[in-house]
Length: 558
Image (spheres, rainbow, N blue to C red):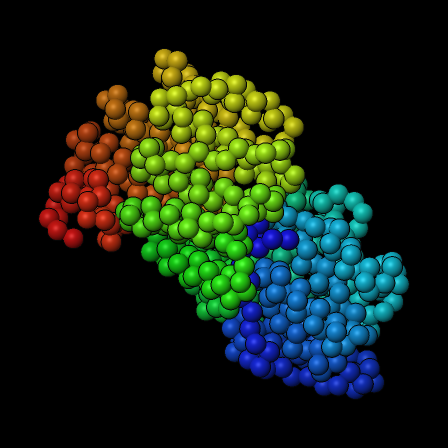
């Protein structure tokens, strides 16, 4: 699978940088138990603990593969596991972990055919494969991954994997890898819809407890930090508690590009914009360095971290820097072939960045219409990009005074909602409702438009904010319209609701300050302006509203 599709780029580490404690496989066979093998933090990928029966020569690549896998560095992890297989032809366990690198469910990707091909290289059936494992503990890991790749639906597979890993972790609390992978398994089960709403809170608590057990035992374990951060994607209220872990993760595994980006998933729901931009500046630089080192095209770059970087710049009032990233994307993609479905991230990178810039600045003349697909999307991920591009196309047109095709486009999106359940269906409903609201206003139905925007806002509030907003922020749209209509108290309520869901957003703070000022509440208006100026400490000198904020906050110069 293509690295741009995964939205992350892999960074390796030389084997010489590792420190591994190992004993020959012949002694392991005599004792029946593996020695304690560790991957040291000096490798810049973190510290993992995985006693195993592999020969001495297999230890460095196998443990490196485990460390990379915990940071979702799937390509490099697969390479490492193949090296372990080559170093010890009788060491079976690496095959299951190599297979596992083909499933990235938290990114909406699952190449089961690729995983089965890896397992087939070891042996033909689960029974014959498991017979080749040397120890009962290793057989438990292998059996858990076999269950994950059973011929059934994704939710059932994830539930079986989670059950297997949590039982393994419970049997031996000293096994940190079992606890780490059990935490991940519970997150995957949640993502796949394998738990009921009633079970979800308990599932989340168990995932946290397992990862915290590992982090407490070894604060340099990459999986423990990584999976605790992912809990924030399910429950933003956990973000403050996860902040120390987020700050630690990039230090634990600085050679993993994903580890450089991942703290952003805590910084964003807390509104920590300088931390967000610093995190993604490092991640984007690592991505470019990796692609250059391997002589790959710009289609392989990490446009996921680039979009988060642009969002951070926009919140900081650094509009020129944000605008420059659109030009950067154009430059690095010049001449790159992005027609393949696996290059969907790259194909839509320029238009996505330009839409985000326009939505945050109001400069719709700068927006870019996404390229039309030449054929039907061949994957869920490509279909998601194409759907979002259609939404963006209609919004851009409407903002420029052209609603051609908007009614038909909204109707087609509405028709698709019935066949999608869960979060995908909800996202479709939000996008469709916003288009219907824009259409209602264009047709003169101000009240009906407001009702539709209220509905879109309520739906958006029901979902955790994972990443920059995909759509217009409905509360802020309502706030602006109420303020323009002289309904300042209602406008203030909408901006406060926006900030409750998306803390510290600059547009919401500006709107709230203006709404409070319009109601005569100068003290609270000044307080909102001061919060805005804290975001804009490095803002462009000519940023609109910067002088307004300084005057209202009683500060002449920054």
